[in-house]
Length: 504
Ligand SMILES: NC(=O)c1ccc[n+]([C@@H]2O[C@H](COP(=O)([O-])OP(=O)(O)OC[C@H]3O[C@@H](n4cnc5c(N)ncnc54)[C@H](O)[C@@H]3O)[C@@H](O)[C@H]2O)c1
Ligand SMILES: C[N+](C)(C)CCCC=O
Image 1: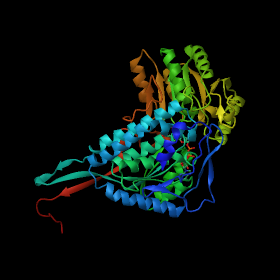
Image 2 (image 1 turned 45 degrees about the vertical axis):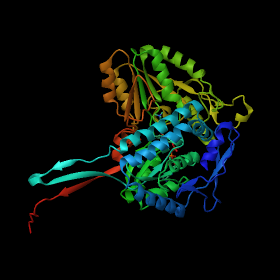
Image 3 (image 1 turned 180 degrees about the vertical axis):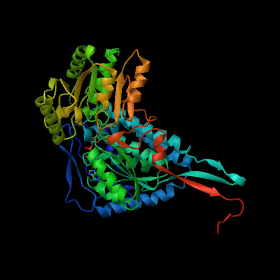
Image 4 (image 1 turned 60 degrees about the vertical axis):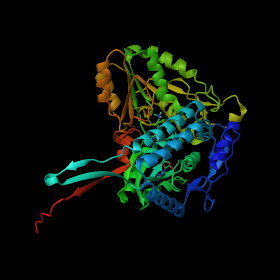
């Protein structure tokens, strides 16, 4: 059925799509909600129009989805890695083949530019392909023991895993969670953000690729996530979202001693030293702040610039920020689309007002924006913003804004920059631009308290590289070989070849 939604995408334009198919998926097919009295409208961010209705799943529906996943898991775990890889490679191929249509649907649901959405879908199929490649390599070890005895370890799946996603990278988050989960032999029940429920198309792609019915299920809702975290059949919860919700997920999962991966928010620092290539540093700062309308967990929103180059940096960054084309996200030339919701837009604008009250200077942007195209007049657009005169104690520097707002501050010494960069409860990402001093680049990278440090770039995310946080930004990893450990468990088998040497 999603095939039909995707098939209708080539002719789709902003403001033209309405989705009516059910958004739940288990047992190998889309499932209608049991009742729809509590349906919530889902809006197209670029127009403010209703795109579809999202009906939260109740406990009976969650039970059905989890049971369906459990049944599929019992079949899937019996396959060899190579057999699983074959199915996953087919899923990767289908995603790649339909990338244009999936990206278009993503733009209509999320508001980001088509250029970015295409890159997100490419990263998604690459992720499925990458984990397909690792599944055949899952292996234990043989351990020699005294007297010819031995032990061996098996890396086994966990069972039914839950994925809970945020709205900023809907399809990619689902791929980042499901690919390693399935590669390790698990099933997954995925709950997208209620703001971006159309991620359900991934379930149909896995189904078409040949996974057992139920292996990747989708349930809808917000608090539905709590039902999943407390469900006795669920073995693991991988959560992407804010720190406050992440804490709740951890508490609820603790009740059932479930494994947890938390991919949470950030307020990442970007350090720009005076010996950098300024052109690259400016481009890096824009990449660090304005992808997906600034709604990116790992954005480098605290930009520390060495005092000597601050004036040139600000001049160039402001010039380029003012030139970012904001508008219809489905147009090729657009580089910034709409924020996710009216409420979120108001929240971001509120942060800017507060920053001004606390003494920050708006160098550009920070205003609601109404594009000339009349169909976009109800959309949630704003102009990207650069803040100067910021200090470390301001709210705009301490809290995650999750919008296109860059806060710039001067620093004098390396030691000072590192100390200020680390003075935060977050620890998701960080960056450093310094061209000539290789040892400084690695010294600073080693000192920054964050799960990722970009040197002379920002916000690139190869699937081979593990991604995740330090401190309140979470734990566990996505992408990279490390993630196989987070979706599997070790069994040790100890073999006695002689008689039992009993103490009794
Ligand atoms: N570290 C990462 O990889 C990463 C990636 C993307 C987004 N994020 C973070 O996500 C946040 C923005 O996303 P958001 O607004 O969707 O976050 P959120 O915490 O509001 O919601 C995240 C998910 O949790 C669900 N949820 C809500 N209440 C729940 C409950 N009681 N139990 C279980 N699940 C529940 C939501 O429906 C949604 O699916 C930002 O803080 C951002 O930094 C982190
Ligand atoms: C692909 N990026 C840009 C690294 C974003 C990862 C997901 C965070 O919100």
